[in-house]
Length: 510
Image 1 (cartoon, one colour):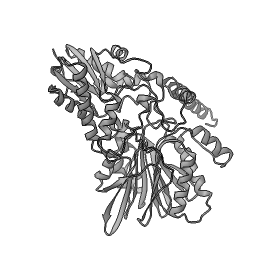
Image 2: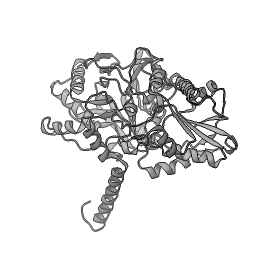
Image 3: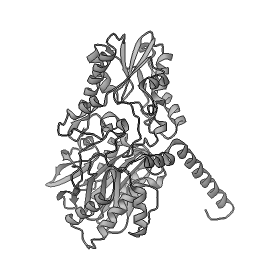
Image 4: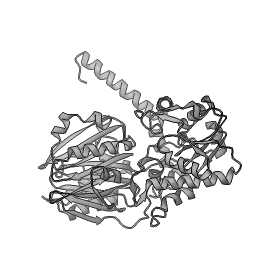
């Protein structure tokens, strides 16, 4: 999962891009990068780390240019090496740089085609590099000295024809403009807006509307599924739907967890959607536990707060903040390795004992993925003196891998995979557990925009809407990207670095 931003402005855009990336930091805490175009010359800075750590004053001074793109990332497809930080760059044609959010499900096939047929070399295991080279090849085939908007749209059509999966991407053509496009199902989000500066209309493309709000841009609309939005260096905007009709199915997990509550996504207020999740979850509690003895509702910060507050109001039960969050610990479910996730939970949260002592507590979380966090939190509540600990999830049970840009590649690591709700209840140690119904979750989101009736819900129902994901693909994905594979990869990298140091010490080539 990643955050994207692109700006075409009247003056240097580096500071605007930096400020926007800090607003999108929740979408990626592994790496950050900015690329700007200054009269056709590319300026690039990227590295592992938070935005504030990657960019120093000296870097910002070098990022001159009136247009640019920025990126924050969590590692999904590919490793977490600094070489995988984005934007990626390819020099031909024109000098192209790309920022990408999502996953290509046919990346391996495309890599082979790029090498054998397009004669392009792929240097990393990132599907983002594959996407960039597909776009570059499609544009190069047109053999134009100066690309027009129509040429850019033709290249995007080629991308949609060849690439499968969930993706939103920004590509900057050095000296010409920035194009943003979205997969034909609209799985991954992308929105654009504008602001007026001294008679010049500046444009921004970003993953979330809050990015536009933070910089004073007025939201125009979401980029439509399969659509490309091209903004040239003169500030002229061109739009074109570049892919055939497909079901509009945005990722519902954005509403559950990833997006900021103050964002609008596909015309839906994330905040309002989460309020409705709480209402519907409360109705289910009333239905299944009409004689409940809940004394207090306590959210697991931060993303569950909105749902928990509305749930408590609907149940007529006290709402209390029972956990204090350490803001400097990253999101735990997406961390590589169970041991790291376990360690981080205790670092991340601390219980306020007086809110638990002698009470029957209903803990509310946005979702249960691997179960590591909620199991430890339930135990923390008991250690703080709670009589009974109940648990409610604002989302249904996560039973299947995600292949469209969220780091849940391994079904075996999902606590609800192949298990009943009762078995999960026992494993996490709750006195009782309630999951949101999928129909209620969909209703909570679609109420904000009745035109969207379907969502990408594969983590809940196992239905992969792109039609190219089967058991063989999922097995290969799990084998390559489960925690055990990540551990082996980390060991190999450590050994490689150690070997390089030894070679250098004895005068060899490293």
